Amino acid sequence: MAESKTHTTNYFDTFIETAEDSPVSKAEMPPQKGDDKTVAGLQFDMIYENPYKYTSDDVIFGVYASKNKISRSDMEEEREKFFSKGQACMRASPLSKRYGWGVHSNQDGKIAIYAVESQEYNQFTADEKLKHTRAMRSKRV
Image (cartoon, rainbow, N blue to C red; front, side, top):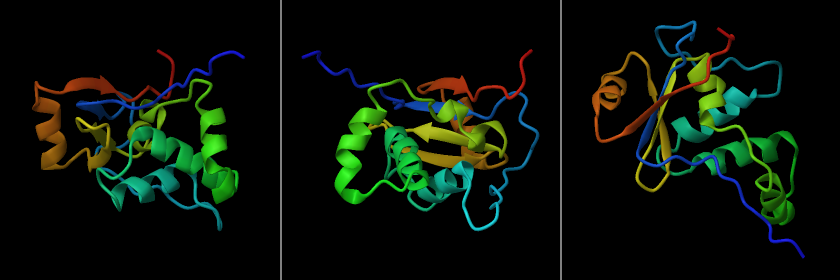
């Protein structure tokens, strides 16, 4: 039997700055569409209400599980299947691409979000001990 390879979206000691082509200069809460929360809304709720509780993998899979109504009993198996393929990381999140939120990953890979206009965001962008990357652009150059 082939050995299963697990991919991860986790970063460590990293700050993901907003995309260069982000349309906002002030962070926004993602809007809700009808009765269902959007991917951005689900990510926002998980991270904003629980800073440094979850890793990127936890958030990415948690949103996938919620959207696909995966039962608690199937979580472990489904998570393993989900991460057997590469997944988009928080650099592709609408929070950083569209809504003005930077994502900080601490030394344990746990994440929190910071509004682009906040003092904390500016401190993270100036912190030379962190690795820095930007959210992916929405438009091709």
